[in-house]
Image (cartoon, rainbow, N blue to C red; front, side):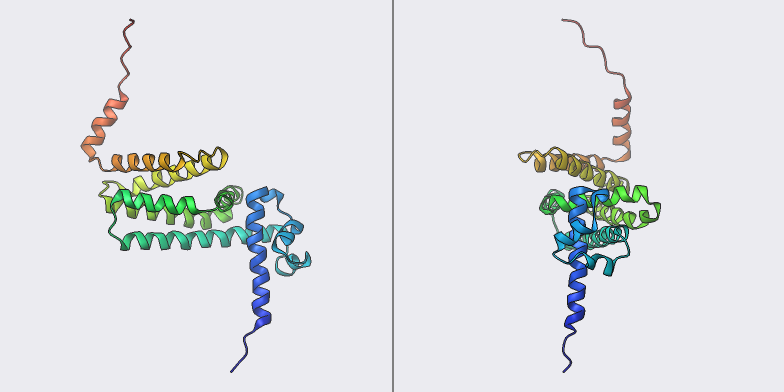
Length: 218
């Protein structure tokens, strides 16, 4: 019986430690603040290990962000499959989604947005980020379709943008007592709007286009 290749396993473990450490460092210091020395220190490996696996700090950081995005994609696909397999009410599905979102460590949320920002600077990376955003929108579209939304694809984009906006605000200005409840209410309001038929939407749009009447002076 062949013995396991322990040398290869140890090598892969060191590489994995570097990638995970790079995600943490980018989350704390940004892409510009990531260095070989800090990532190696965080990973608990010799400094020379970084150059063994990666030709430059740029390659290390980009690899870390790409692998992180691949993990995020897998997580979203798994969540979508789980929600589709269970017959949950729309409100219960929103509750499950919020529970998953709030279970994410803040550092991983920061890393997600760092990946988005890096894609804005590097057009070549946009396709990979687009795959993640598309998966998030597909998850939202699946939830909206199950709830009976009339325009699920259109609503999915707003659904994801709303979640991302709340996540950014939660990072910059946490409100532990109300963050979850506020996001839940906003998502349910958006879902309710998606249940309107086209005629109801036209009536509401017409009302919103009206100039408010002046309030009479007391």
